[in-house]
Image (cartoon, rainbow, N blue to C red; front, side, top):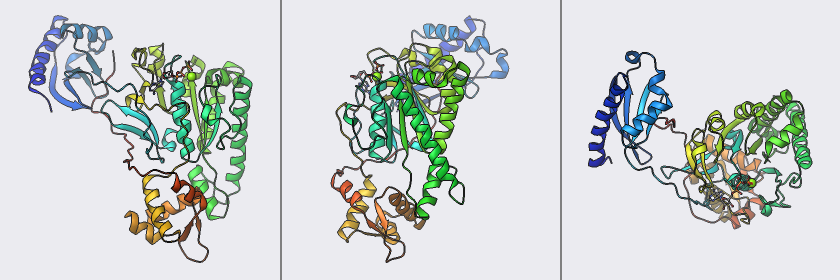
Length: 442
Ligand SMILES: Nc1ncnc2c1ncn2[C@@H]1O[C@H](COP(=O)(O)OP(=O)(O)OP(=O)(O)O)[C@@H](O)[C@H]1O
Ligand SMILES: [Mg+2]
């Protein structure tokens, strides 16, 4: 709801903005003004007629935005230039994000939960769509907590982990964990070994992919074909490289090779279900472009250089206040308060809500799950039910019942998960909705 006060304010802003432009010998060629509410903020948007103003540069300079702000007695004016030129003025107060949001214990496991955005809405995405993740931030800004958040969720989703942790403080509760493909790397040389191990896994997977009659393009395709022909499915890997700049420099040798090495890691990993997280205080020029290219998600906590933040698609990250660790600008959702995961929090592999309900029902009927049952119990189409069953078979939660067609039996693995999954429901959300206006900070 736009309040009366905001409506009055909007009229003043329209008048003052036009005057302010005129005072600077700029044409107040505003073709439309509208008010809108986004994420609980009321915005005043003035659309400029780009044909009438001629040279755009003076209309879009940081200096002008600053002057407009002064003329509007400190109300911030942003530029949105995704679609023509618009001045965006915030009429309401800037909503505050809470300083601490715990990862909900019942968060769905089929998505990576990132945190909450200004609207209070949770943000999450699928591993596939994230590809690789770039994490930037100065010391104490929240990188390690975020890496822990990712690693713990990978465990819950049944992935394998390859972790590098120089200060030994990031993943204490994962030390010796069964999900690790090798011990946590705590030195640069161990980190290098970890990357090399990952590359060997890519080679192995390349070999396995080639052994199929039909070539697979990605892990999901490979696994489907593998299971159908009685082979073991391959788990996704999460490879976390803290202080990635140092590790990659050691791997790349010469400067020019570095970007190529990274591109290769990224490209191969993507095809084989191996997701990298590149975390660092900053990336040098020789890495930044390649990192940006490989990352399906960039998360910038407080950074030193606004230029670097911009180049990662995270403008504004240099202005995150010092006292806000865990607050980040992301290239997908803008400002996000990332979830906090305690150092000692233990998370085990777990079931999504729908899975728990279905498995419980199956269990009370002797463990049998047929396609028809899944369709009826979960209200799914035949195709969806088949996908679900195949997915569970991939994770080792059900096995084909050899005596019946299209029938599966719950495995002990699923039964164990059933006994340690609580029962509170949460709606999964993958939110990619574009904001009405992309706000570019000055
Ligand atoms: N998501 C978060 N929510 C709330 N507080 C957080 C969050 N992330 C980090 N913090 C707080 O900030 C402190 C420092 O965070 P963290 O260790 O993750 O920083 P870092 O970027 O890894 O620093 P360094 O580069 O020195 O390792 C944490 O101990 C915690 O108290
Ligand atoms: Mg750290």
